[in-house]
Amino acid sequence: MRPPTDSRCTPRLTGWFLPLVVLAMCLLPAISPSAQEAAGTNTAGAPHLTGKITTLRYWDHEPFEDPLLRCLLKSFALQSGKTHKLVHKAPEALKEPLRYVAISSAATPFVIAVGGGRVPRIVVDTDADGDLAEETPVTAGKGKSSYGLHVFGPIALQSSPEAAVAKIRVLISGKTLLLAPAGYRSGRASLGGKRRRVALVDLDLDGAFSTVYAADSTPGTAPSRARDILAVDFNTDGNWDPASVDTPPEIQPLARLLLVRKTYYAVSIAPDGAKLGIAKTTPEMGTIDLGDTRARLDLEGDAAGLRLSTDKHGLIQLPTGRYSCTNVQLTDGRWTITGKPADGPLLDLLVASDSPLEVSLGAPLIAKADIKRVTDSLISIGAQLVGKGGELYSPGATKKGRRQAAPKLRVISEKGKELASGQFEYG
Image (cartoon, helix red, strand yellow):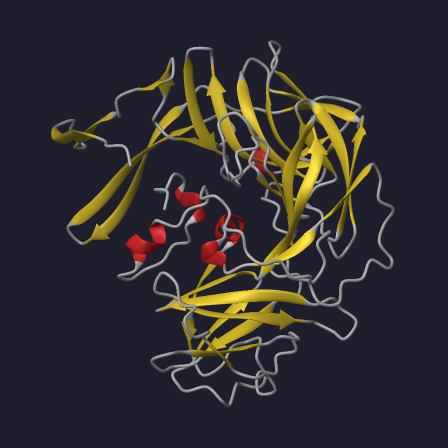
């Protein structure tokens, strides 16, 4: 098993099994499972598909055995209680003590109840009506417990008789519940002169695979609407890389467009995900103006998921639409520093064609101590650099590709006396 390379795809867990879980990361080669078509596949009412049409097959996977689903696992803390605010009829077949979690990230939120016992059983509100007494309890699959977790499913969800069916798997250990789609559709499409592996994931669990990324309606906040996922193996290495130095993230919220080697492609998808249409296109363009700042931005938007750098004038050309910046890298050719937006305008960027969108970020960077009390006699001090757009940078700057020494620390009293000194450590 390949050693871990990116902790962002490992859910936060507690317990003795954590070292085993950490070994399961996103950059493992995909395991070849047996394929099975999703039940009830129906392309009736599908939108007009344009360009080259790719057929995508449905593959069923256990999340910790698949690199893509492992990256999309969501972690929830189980809450103890007799009932839950979204439940009007509690499950009758589960042993106490009961624990609950609400899956609010789904297109139609639903509740999962977990019973007590050595091998827990769960009840899933599969039709999201708040009645858990009518649901059938599910027991963890025999011989399917991996990395110290109990695995349940696949479990079918259907919010109404007219709705499509979604399938999930649930994994439990201690006070932690993990959830992921039970599978996804994948195939190979011609992009940028190469056949590249592509995949569609029903991340919002509505039974369709065509929910396009959309921003939240509240200005200045990160987009939060449920959406589906389009994964593309841009570097053709056989992995699903959530982040890469030279290419955009290969796992992105589904959008209208896809950028591959400076060429834009229009994306059209049948609701059941069985067909994917990709056609070269020339979208309406707009501009982000960073002024004197030179930077690379990672952007998620309704138009596309992009990684773009400023030109010599501080401008970035991109399709019109609404975006959220997820990552910033400042550079002057020698020095480079990376950060992420906090609350502020970088989380909600509306790009139009009529005038450039002026965005303020970068220098001057202001040093800030992140101080947290651990115990009555112990505090933790971290270091951050804050840009003029409110973005937060790690002090780990690089010069000509080499990371510089961690910053030093001095604790000064109100009278100017040095009380302590030291040096931060990376990691």
